[in-house]
Amino acid sequence: MGTKGPQDPIDALAALFEHGPAAVLTGAGVSTDSGIPDYRGAGMPPRTPMSISQFMHDEAYRRRFWAGARVGFLRSASVAPNAGHLALARLEAAGRIDGVITQNVDNLHRRAGSRTVVELHGNGSVIRCVDCGNRWSRAEVLGWFDDLNPGFAEEHAGAEIAPDGDARVSDTDRVEVPSCAVCGGILRPDVVYFGETVPPEVFAVAETLVRDASALLLVGTSLAVNTGVRLVHRAERRGIPVAVINRGPTSADRRESTRVRIEGGTSETLAALTAALG
Image (tube, rainbow, N blue to C red; front, side, top):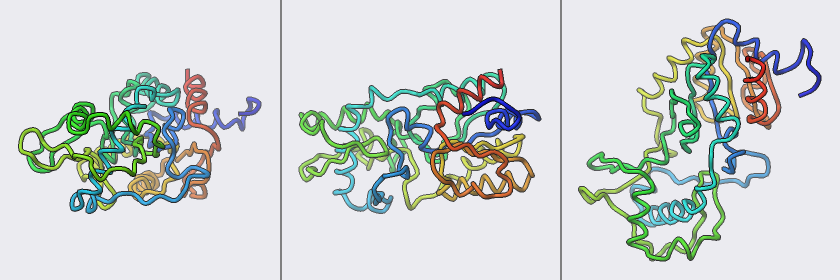
């Protein structure tokens, strides 16, 4: 980070906490050190995300999803919260932030110990029935997948892992899709798919954190999703400063409200911030 001094970026970042707790918005960049690839990181290929319409109306897409989810789950045991997640949990425990707003669905903030986590795009570790609303853990439903497709996961264990943590599996024509154990309905991850919007009640909680904050930290996000931009607008209306910690450009870099811009990894930056704040 360079030699300590009046213009040191960590000092500038820590100064934003002088008037009270800050709000934090995280993106995929906070989880890359946990081994989860970034959708928009340097060198990442263009992607064609599955839409909710495809998932709901085409069983071929559902077969592809469940096959990828099952194979990807084989490697999930090695995915754990990193130093950045843990630093944010410590900042919350110390009263420096009131919680974390995240665009991620990987559940790593909760596993790190953060108590208030606003998951704008849901939580991929939860599976729900679209018909009756019952919910199960992903692990439980993938056990049903194994009962329907014995040996499939092991046969495809070498498949490439995608940025959402699932595997890219192409041989899915004979995959049997698990269904709701209560009503037989379609099961889906409890996340916001492309083509869906963030639930208003979830965004309202995120707005409250920004409304009560002395600053807004954007951590590991390029701010390419409109929901995050809306939160920056809320911060600007209040006149509070914005800080950006990210590898690569973001849409907030040249905004007048951005007082601190750190080009670097989130894990080491947040750990240094925690140390600076004592």
